[in-house]
Image 1: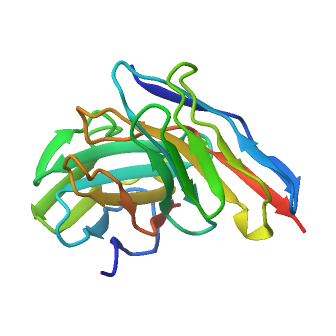
Image 2: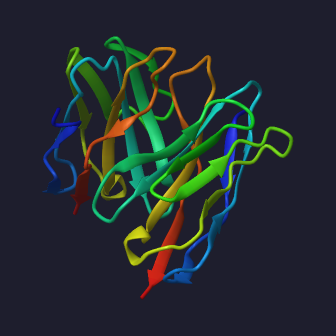
Image 3: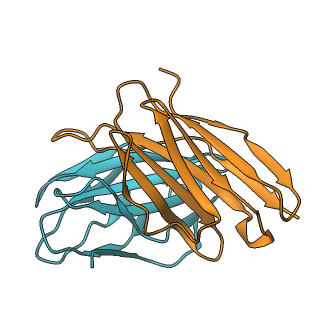
Length: 115
Length: 112
């Protein structure tokens, strides 16, 4: 399996622009997590889904952020409009939610720079 | 709520030194415990895990023992290598939940 695939790996945009980050889950996994990592705040959970349903979005910073799972293998995280303070590395991770599962497998991340 | 506390970094050691990274947790139930490692430019990956008290997780020469009495899961390695330089995250997952609670991470530098 190719693992969790994130795109793009790097994104540079200007303040006010819309940014869309993409994530492909590992085949057979049914949970999807979006994280943000910065030097100041460390690793923060933004939102997670189970079987395509958002379970906990309490970490989403504000209404500018939205996440979707249009199907069982794909997710997007959208920021509109983007701001310089959104600059961070964004990771998605997938897992199989079950009694023997729950190990999260991370993608390589998207490094976002908002100028 | 549940939380994980791990020692502040960075930790700098010479090659072949003994490593300990302390981790303690607070949880209401009986969580599973994890150590994840993040190499430069990569996402986190599971290093080892333990699912119940007194379990010892081990991988790549690293070990950690689930100590319920002290609510700890300290990471140890007898002889570190330059290639072990990375950020190490202690984490827990309550059995009733899917999400993992991560510590803030400890950056490890190994000098040749």
